[in-house]
Every structure is written in structure tokens, then in C-alpha cells.
View 1 (cartoon, rainbow, N blue to C red):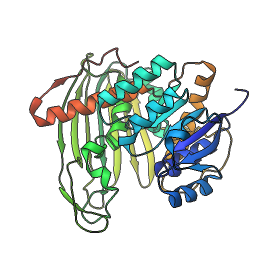
View 2: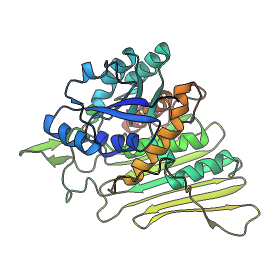
View 3: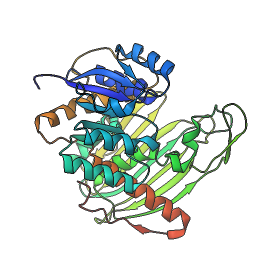
View 4: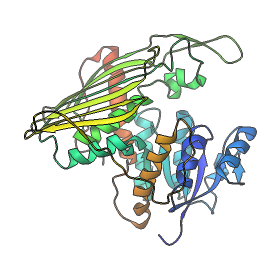
Length: 367
């Protein structure tokens, strides 16, 4: 590209933590301005990002002539309205996961983007973490052969009663809260990226802690999930299980396994780092495999914070998305990928409410 893509970020929570520094790390983009509801928080975020252009009016913000791309990192309930407005304004659009509150809203975004020829993506940046990027490439190269089983497990203590409450919207399903839409949405995207569209889902989606202290006093009635098990079936005969809980005291771990006719892969992420193990028919056991050593091309230092791995992963995703602005097809997650995850989440909730195995009708439809 002759000129960098001019970016405006809407949302100064995760938008300030990850989106702004990720765009700032990639030469193909120029972070021009930020938008948020709280003027003081917005001013701090803009200063930290090194921009002096800040707005509290997202409706005029998405129509600005000096912005080519709108990056939406607001709470989930605002994704649909802001995303549609940005599309209609002729902007490229990146929306943080989950794409929307439900499949209907996600379908609106997919349809609007197709109708307007919009360059659009869903921010499933975890495909670009060092271990998952390596596993993604290995499976694309046939490491497993015919896939048989995939399992993903993650554990955290974010909603344990001993921890500080998170933002109130995160405890309400109607506002996009819960960890099925949060952490597990990344995992759903990951397993679908590896194995394609599943055909059926069965799930238990559970709320363990039903009340949390509200800011300023009182109680939040929690209906969003803190613990889930999602089982998937593929037309190939492969099956998958994804489990997650965020009420585990003193436990933080992420692991996955994939088994097939030609090989096995295992990945583990703990506080000590990430490891990938693999073995194929010619091997006598699992051995440690190299994770991706890919670095951001600009070489700019990333801010050192808890979210640094996500910032780097997003920056790598943005590098791979840049050719789309010159008309090249990329592997960056589309709005259709976001819609696929929304459909699985809805089916999981329906299954947990008593529907049993739910047919998804996804195969071949998400692109």
C-alpha cells in the first residue's frame, strides 16, 4: 500500500489496552483518533496511544473523511449499531469478538458488509499466538491426517467470589456477557479454523455464582455463564469438546489436544509459558515442537503489560490483513467467521436449555 490505512478506534477499554497499541505497531496503519463515552478516560487513553484527536460522539466519528478504518472495541451491545453505521459510511471495519449479541445481529453485519463491498474482519487474534499459529500451520500442512478428536480446556478464577467484580455488563447475557461469548468464542473460532464447520452441538452452559457486588452498593443478579462444556460433531466423524470455568481458585491454565490418523498435537499454556508437543506415525513418542517465532515486522517495542501477548497477536493479524486493502484475499477472520461462532453459541445455549444435540446447518455457509 502506498499510504497507511487511517484508523479510528471506538472504545477505550480493550480498545486502549490492545487495539491502539497493536495498530501503532504495524507500519500499514496509522492510528489517527480515538472515541469513547467517558471524556476523562478517553483523554488518558488517547495520550497513552500518542494521539491528540479524541471524540465522545461515535456517530460523527465513523463518518469522518480522514478515517479509512473503524475498529470497534466497545462492550458487545454496541457492536451492531456502530458496525452498521461504519459500513454505511463506507469504512473498513474491524469488530472485537464476539461479533454481536446474537446471530441475527451478526447476519445484519455480514449482509451489510457484502452489500457495500466492505473490507471487514472479526478480531479473533488468538489464532496468531505463537503456539496456536504453529498448530494452525501444522494442521493445514496435514500433520494430523484425518482428524479424529479435538479437546480444549481453560481454567481461571476471574469470577471466583474472592475476586473483584468486572464490568456489570459482563454478568448479563442480554448485554453480551459470560465466558461462552468471551473466552470460549476464541476457542470455537480456533477449532473451526482447524477442522471446518461443525454440524451439531450439545452443551451445558452454567452460572455458578449468581450474585455479585454492584459498583456503588447493592447486588448484580448474574445470568451469564461462568462454566461451560461444549461438544461438537463434524460431518467427517471428528468430535470435539471445549470446557471452561472462571470460578477456579488459584488455577489458571489453557490446554488443547488434537488427534488424527497420522499424528497428535498437544498445547499447554501456563504462567510459565507455552509448549507444543507433537508426534506422527514415524515417531516413538510426543516431542516438543517449536512454536512460532514470528515477530512484528516494524520491530517497534510493544507495551509491557498483562495483555502484551494479545497485542502482539493482534499486530500480526493486522499485518496479515493489510493485503486485503489492495484487494487480496487473506486468512484473517471475516464477519462470517464471527457469525459462525454466534450460531454455535446460540445452539449451545439452546442445547443447555433442554434441546439436546442441535443441528447447526453451517457446513459450507460461513464464507
